[in-house]
Image (cartoon, rainbow, N blue to C red):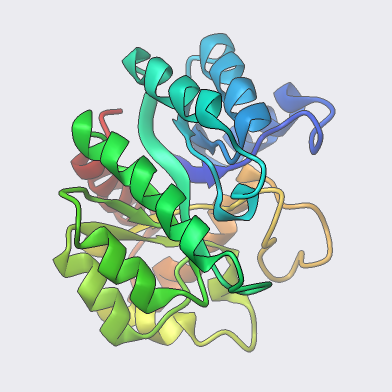
Length: 249
């Protein structure tokens, strides 16, 4: 059985979550980590983990929400870390894709959440887009480990993150025909990766253009199994063992 280590199973995307989970289970996906991005989604994560035994959560403020958060939102994250099913701080990080004008504010928010993770000895789930060097430099200031979500960088960068104690999150992007990620992932070794969908985004080939879902973990797993010439059972065992190294799950 597989785990979708990063998805956004919010009401705004899925009308009937029970159906989504049943479809995933029929594809041998039976465990889910839902990532929060802002106060609204963080509150929804708490409800999900309380209502479903096989859903775990992460709480964080995404860099795209840097203009909208307040002190109460950070307090909410810290207050709910006592819940055993909140297993990480995330999705947090830096994103300069749309603008660099709020770069300093992003770094400040990132550092504040890393400080919380360090204080409570929680792993982090990192979003980094067009901000690799600043992400690495900021992470080096704190004693944290975790996952580099939706990795799309070079082999050199991947090795830096791995040396720092991070796993590499691999999703549907690896299946895209023009993707160079597969060449990087092939060189990393299965002991350094975990599987994610980032649902409802980044639907794998050949389903691009439709809404993503945790059931497509199987498609990502099949692609990676072929890449490494291993069977699905071995891939499931290795990636689940990897998850257990980082997350208390």
